[in-house]
Length: 225
Image 1 (spheres, one colour):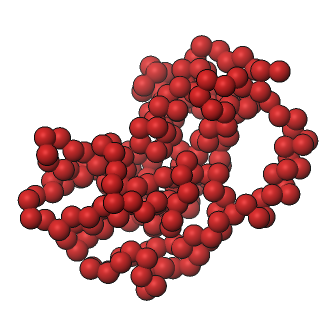
Image 2 (image 1 turned 90 degrees about the vertical axis):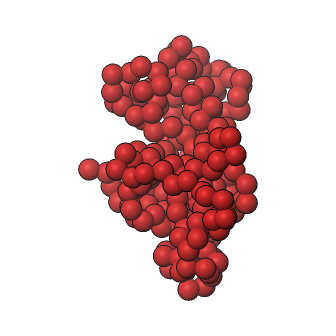
């Protein structure tokens, strides 16, 4: 039997779908609170837990923006039998993983997936991400802090030479590889940080600029304090 959502829960679910379609990432708790006028991120968390109980989303512990949609847009929410679901999860978890290389520091001028950049390979569940990633990039620094991407996190990257405006991308500018939000306007490309302590980067005519991929998810490697 379909489980009815409250008006607020439906608004939260619609916002999650919208952000996943627009940027490839679900919103953070703080972004949900800001968009829907909640007083704090705790209110967002309460609605997310309610949506998870009703089978609309799955929350992943330890993953920043760890929200996965479980029902297609417009479909009624129904709750599967919990014992059957748990048994299925247990039976398939071992075989459902994909093996991804973890890329550390990238040397100037060399391919991201060059052997010398790969720290190790790890198995991850593909359901954590809205698109299948090609590798995990270890984040350096705090320029994307306010997007929930912290130093040491593993950013799931899908290789792509193109991206939509507003997506979080992995870009090569000259000898540097950087993670920023892509902004195109009037023919000008900017790479925007998500931290006011950092300045936007404008791609100037003649700059060596390449899009290496788009971010499709994140794995938190240390607990938030």
